[in-house]
Length: 455
Image 1 (cartoon, rainbow, N blue to C red):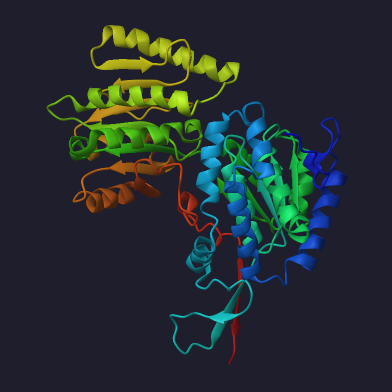
Image 2 (cartoon, rainbow, N blue to C red):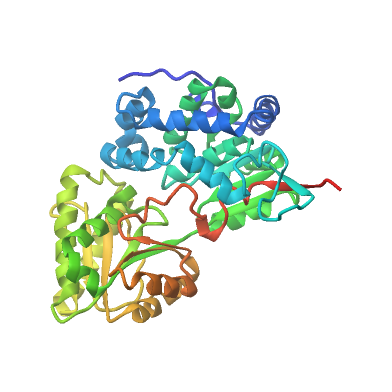
């Protein structure tokens, strides 16, 4: 289909258009003015209603912005249309009034805390009330690997009544751009409080212009990127950074003995979601050993499931660099497997579509991503946690498959060890709307509280 998008945002300018510091400053000041005019007095209920309607529209196969995005997906995003469609469905299904109100209550105590002063419901006859206020200009430094974090930050910014400037990685702006245009079409005034731009990282004059205007900067990227941003921020700017994180799965012998095929399907879902590129995707799946050779059986079944999914939800084409990284890693394990009975490899034929490596060594391995998964056989959780100790401070999510009687104790042990999020295997890349990224409150980190003592 064809769709000519109007030039509402900087990202809509011709490819060869030059961005300057003056243009960035002017854009920031414009959306701030629009924010004061169109956001400050808007009720929370109105914003929730618009977001819920947008969520429903994005789930429709006939929605023009969705069609345009999926049509351009392989070339513009690096994901196959099937992978992108599944990821978008998971996200937009969350945009319901019930979920959005629940998020606001979780973060602020009451859903209308951004509208007016309210007392704390748990303080009885307290004379203190409080109002939450979002930043006047919220700047997002969006990651280049996944589109959903940028969409989530845009939703949070709307709820916080903040004008927003979304800086996308070069060549990775299509999903935020389509969402911004759909918002503009749904409500021109809300869309006018948003700016989208893309440029290559390290453009200091553009970044300095953006940081000088922003009250709060939210950045997702490598630890090195976050450290660089921190050094450039004005003293008064609030900074929320989400750096490098990794995740793993853990499967008990009881889970495999009770429902092996269901567990394999859930593990494959986590490996294929967003092509394993996000911080919530597993690099390693630890499997408890048993007398029946559970680890090897699981790896073999997982390989078969990944092969089947490649036909219905293909990974898509990789860059030459990413494909070479997988080929190099495969060659290493092919040699190791030839000389060690404790290492085995399953791999897609004549492509790098998927790879499963089985090892008895519990040491955590950083995957190549793009459906390259390690299966590590361990005796029990203590051995797995010891193997992952080198990345303990960077662990985000643990996907857990176990017997019902084990769940609570294993979750407690994982939490005390350092996992920030524990979920059922199969849901690692699909957190709920109100999940606490890196253990921090998603909306609470953005707002400023104003207390009013009535007497």
